[in-house]
Length: 607
Image (tube, rainbow, N blue to C red; front, side, top):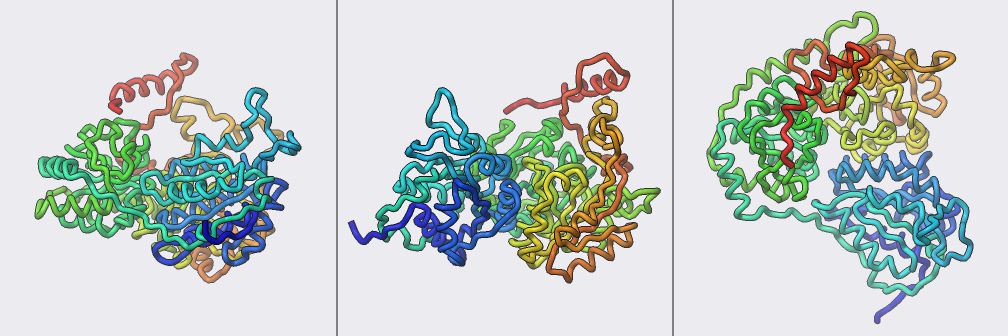
């Protein structure tokens, strides 16, 4: 049987996690974000305190935002490292469900360790326990089942012998990668067990690169050779694969235009002559034109979300899906090439030899010139989001622009001219409240670059407390807080859908008094360096000054909620399927519904 060591289940979990290594010799689980409660403080909390620097613990302010920070850290490391988050039974656990969904949609590793009910059931119902009248095995943690890739409930210490390796396998599997939930019964955390010493030997986790099937590769190469005007849709899988340089070599050698998804943006620098910019609903005129003219769409590492496909109206050509996950590769009736993106592109390039296409790059040059002019225009009153983006671009061209929800994701995808690796967007789940915590996690992963966190006043109000954590840990990043006095993005969508302004801007909400929020004072009260930029010149100066600080900088600038990011840019954007009421109550609704029916008739619905 070999040597054994007696440890509590919590001690065993912590010791095991501390010796799971990457190929580069770092811990795969960098550390643990923790808010303790009665469901994890005595068991897991004690074990983490004993572990010290072997598996460091960090205190956060909110369970959801701690998990957002961990997600951004994993994304910043290209899925090659991750962090864990623990919370107590009850609201601490359910607060993490939204973050689990963010990680699931974005295919990112995240280890969630919520406390759970007593496995022995002696004190049932314990404080904060959810009871199912017809199922005695249910707890609040069952909420995680639809939003994680692997779920396990630890009801005996020895369950860890299989559960922990399974969890790591999921988080390091390129096809199945996503969040894991190990619901840890609070009495089991404290139970001692005799563990095999061999269980705690360091292990290196190798992230494999699946090679393509020979038949699929041959058919894919033949499809590209037969094409007259192919286009590549670059998704986040290119970055997860570390295929940025291979993609650049491929499109340079074969002269294939590239259009970008939110997750794939910055895999190829905007300066590359084959980068035609953002695709789809929030896409550039050049990218959408080349997409519609294409006779083959090569979708590399993308989920083909509706924003990318223009709700299935943008791509009329056959699709070749290159993806490590068959579920994603075969979407929209695509021909599939199931493989790691880097390996697939290398193999395809060899198979294509000297084949080279001849795309017209003039639309790309015209688009970039139009963007420069649009972002450089002088404000007539309050600046637009586009003008703010232009100022930040001028002040920090090599920074990493990051965001999650509202107007800015679409505006940044459309207008930000990213250097390689200079973009980080959570738009799979488009989770408001991700931004501040995500900026902290990204800054921890990428300390060598200035992290530029774009956040609207609405999203800032949802979740800002991790500013305190960043101040405590001395994690610097720069927040550009655009104050348009409400949910300006959805206000514009409401108007576009024929609706009257209602409940989005504060001015259109049922309130007794309009709020006058002093965001500068608020951020400063949490220890951040906070300033108000009176104009775009002041904004540029403050961004430059922020580089020398070791704490977050929050720059507040008032913006107009009215124009959209592409207003005035010819050809920007594409249709998005947002269902319009079939209601005959106003002229606006009648006209919007007629437009909706016309567009809906153009959708391609092959799955």
